[in-house]
Amino acid sequence: MGKHGVEILDLNVKELIQMLNEALSEEWLAYYQYWIGARVMEGPMRSEVEPELLVHADQELNHAVMVVDRIIQLGGAPVLNPAEWTKLSKCLYESPEDPYIRVILEQNLRGERCAISRYKQIADFTGNKDHTTHAMATTILNEELEHEQDIEDWINDLERMMADIKKIRL
Image 1: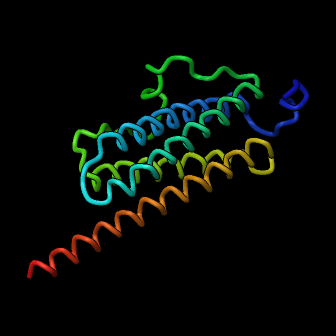
Image 2: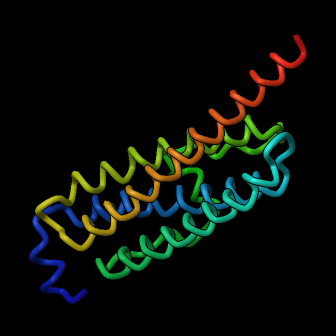
């Protein structure tokens, strides 16, 4: 994006770049949380959920690419040091100390809900002011909403499965 393109934006570009760097940090943490969680996960439905979590991880990585590209287009510098990710992120990274599938899914669900809030914030901040960033934010927001639904569905499936097992034991 050229200088004029940045100049005509009707918003505080430094504030936007800060939000985007926070989002970038969150994407990297989300990528790793999905990726490592899928690798160590144990329990029922693991073989079904693991490949899907890896797809989610890849999508989080793609989000990071989109966000870093936009930061650079706006004339900003993306966060360069991974040590800064947890400092900039408003979303928690939850290490999978308990590898049980339900715990992993709940950790990822909290992360998705935080990401949904982040991209809503960016979309609201850029609406009718920066169409390119707004389009990027709403694209990512829609994927995060799909991730939330996927995870909620898996948790519901686990609950139904466990209820059925209890019925069989009675």
